Length: 484
Image (cartoon, rainbow, N blue to C red; front, top):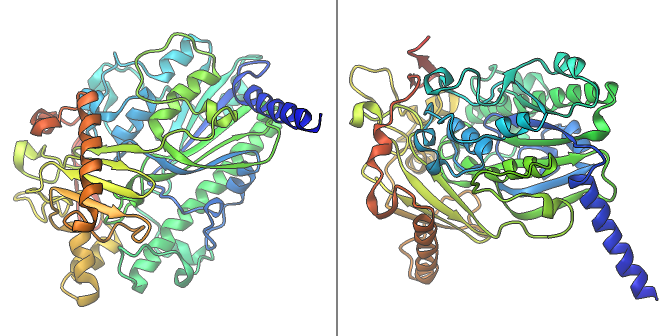
């Protein structure tokens, strides 16, 4: 009888969890908070001791923290397009590139949720950057623009909502010295080993972290409004980031600090203990999850897999690996009328990161200069770290790190994550890992073939020819827009 009782109790807990996340008495509201350039592990919920994020901790008490979440592409526009559609970026046509065109005929969860009676809106940065007016949309693909408080106040009775709060934090530019002013000690921060350990860069990272703290404060304001309006108990809150931190060897790269992002799903009506899940998640998995919560029956073709079975306790493992990709980030190479990107694909497992660079003759960070333009290593955001590394590239402590972040790379890369969490040491040519490399190479090839990836078998030049919807140049210090 004792064992029967324990088993029954366990099944009851799973059932309660499932009801909480998938079968509420009425369809839940969804608040989607998407940060801009926020890397794992920069939050107290991931063990960072120098950053104060109490509101994220509060959310974690009522939900699930994912420790292996990855964006589909480490570049704003394709990452956000992939979230909106639940498709891998290479399946989005011109939407695969930064400031590319997302075809309005590709279904988004915004369109589907509106058909189901949801009030849908966003604030600040939705699908971006790019000009949605040039691709058949009359409004941003993320929905209508609205300020959260007024949006909540205008809801009709019992109407469910989906709201995308797209903060610009912690995207550059940062307020110089904001980290110290906010009480962050640059000497104590977690500095990735692909960055030179000097005061100038520690201060730059501290300024970055101060923007993560500001994000956390705004999350607190959103929670207060939900609580005051009586909506908190029936709102599922999802917090994530579109890609990693705006530093060399991170954003716009398939290394972990470019693709691995925070992900937290919180439900204040849920019962049971807070959870952590170490299985892999691709952010394309959010769309089918949103559709499950909203009980949308008719689905378009999706690459994403719903998180509901994991969140409800039906399954403990979501994915055992993720596939990652990148095409053109910024306009920073003269070929194809400045359209030449740096195409990459990767497979990330628990133990390894294998990367394929399809055009290794190109500069991964962009050309240092392009005649008649102000572009300077245009795939690396301008700011103090970029300036320091460029100015000190020949100094002994910086030279090897500059090479990692800016110089050419071989056609293949392999990183053994147990000993190399910062992806510093390429083991692709070491005999010890020859068998591993073959296996990962084959798995990536199979995936690309199954996905009908345009880069398979050396193709894909049409991607470099896709016209951007807007143009800008990245400099040493910032960005120059050509369409404003």
